[in-house]
Image 1 (cartoon, protein in one colour):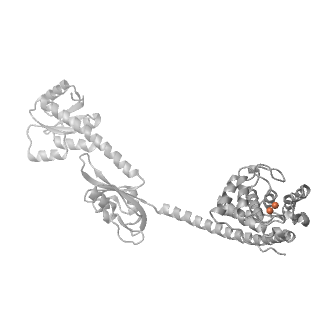
Image 2: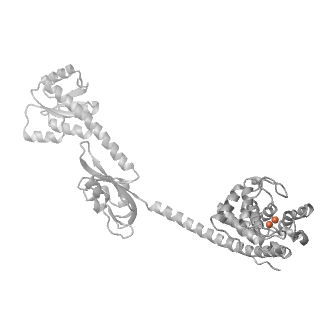
Image 3: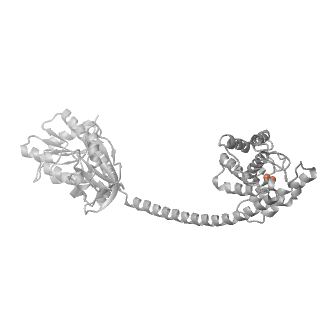
Amino acid sequence: MVEKARIMVVEDEAVISLEIQERLTKMGHSICGTAASGEEAVAIATAKRPDLILMDVQLRGDQDGVDTAQQIRDQIEIPVIYLTAFADDRTVERARLTEPFGYLIKPFSEKELYAAIETALYKHSMEAKLRESERRYAATVRCIADCVIVTDTEMNITLMNPAAQGVTGWGQAEAVGKKVDEVFKIVDEKELTPVESPLVETIRRRVVTNLATPVLLITKNGEKIPVEDSAAPMIDDRGELTGAVLVFRDITERRNAEAAIKTAFDSLEERVQEQTAELRTSFEKLGRAMEGTIQALATMVEARDRYTAGHQVRVADLACSIARQMGVIESRLPIIRIAGLIHDVGKVCVPTEILNKPAPLSQIEFEIVKQHPKAAFDVLEKIEFPWPVAEIVLQHHERYDGSGYPSGLRGDQIFLEARILGVADVVEAMSSHRPYRAALGIERGLEEIIKGRGTQYDPDVVDACVRVFREEGFKFKEVQVST
Ligand SMILES: [Fe+2]
Ligand SMILES: [Fe+2]
C-alpha cells in the first residue's frame, strides 16, 4: 500500500479534476488543494506545500503546466507528475528539464495512477535522503581541519575543502577540473626533486597510500610548506573505483615546536656537560689533595710496622676487584680504594713491640690491637671526605654474623664496602708473611673465607672473591719490604 500523501491536483478541466480527486481519495490520499491555472497553482503549492503535485500540461491562462512546475521548483522541492493528453517533442523536452517524477498519458487507468504516485513518492524520499547524506558529507569535509582534495579516477579535482584551499593557495572554483598534480605539487624535502603524489599509487592499486618521508608542497605562489600526506581510494557499492581522496596537513608548526624542543635540549645538554666538567675538575683537585693525605697516613703506619708494609695497598686492590666482580657501580670504587689504603691507620696507636711480636699475641695484647679501628675512626672523622670513609674503616673487623668488633654489627648493618674490605683483609693477611708465622698462601686465605661463608663473611662477597682469583686470575702485587 502506498503511503498516505497530501496531493494537489492542477487540472483546468473540472470533470477530469474531480475524477482524479475521487480516485486519489479512494486510494487513501488526501487532496490538499486544486487549481485550474498556473498562477493559482504556484500560490497554493507554496502556501500548502503538498507531498506531490499532479500537473496537467495544458492549463488555462498564459502559463502552461511546465512553466508552473518550474516556478514551483524554483521555490520548493515538490515532486511533480505531468498529466497530458498529447505532447509534442518541444513540450516533452521542456518538461524533462524540470526533472519530473513521472508522466501520465490521458486517459490513464487507476493502476497507472497508483504506480506513478508510488514511484514518485519513493523516488522523492530516496532523493531527499541522498541530498541529506551529501549535505552531511560536504559539511564534514568543509569542517575537517586536515586538507582534503577529492578527485575522479582520472585524477581531476572534484572537490577541495577550505583547509586545502588555504594551504595550497588555490580556490575551489579554479582548482576543480584541473589535474591534481597541477594544484598539489610536491617535492622531496632534501633533494627538492618532484615526488609522485600518493594518489597515483592509490588509483593504480586501489589501496591506501602513505608517503614514507615528509615532502614540501609548492603552493600557488611558490611557497614551500612541509606536509604529510596520504591517499585513499573511493569505492562504490558495486566495488568500482569512483575516485580518490587526498588528505594532507601542514606540519610547519609541529616542525617549529620540534626544533624549539631540540634547541632547548641541546643547550641543556651543553650546560650539563659544562657542569660535569667543572665538577670533574674540582673532584680531581680534591682527589689529588686527598691522595696526598691518604698516602701520608698509609706511610705512617707502614713505617712502624714493616711486616704489614704493602698490606693496605694489596687489600685495596683486592677489595676493588671484588666490588667490580659484584657489579658495584664504578663511582663507588674510589670509596673502597681509599678505605682500603688506610684501613689499618689506627695501628699507630698500637705499640710497635706488639705489632712486630714474633709470637702469637696474649689476650691483653690482642685487646690493644682491637682498638685500631676506633683509633682510625677518631682520626678520619675529622677529615672531610665526601664519603663515609671513617665509618667503613671503623667497621672493617665487624663480621656478617655479629661476631666481629668493635660494635658486633651484623648483616646489612655493616656497610657493603666494609664487608668487602673485611674479606679482602683476611685473604691478604693469611696469604702474606706475619711476624709470628710464614706466609700461608692464597689457597689457605680462600679456604678460610669459604669456611666462614654465610657466617662470618657475606656469602656474596665470598663468592665474588673466589671468582676474582679463580676466574679472573687475580694476583697480589709484590711490594718491597723496607728494612
Ligand atoms: Fe685491621
Ligand atoms: Fe688489615
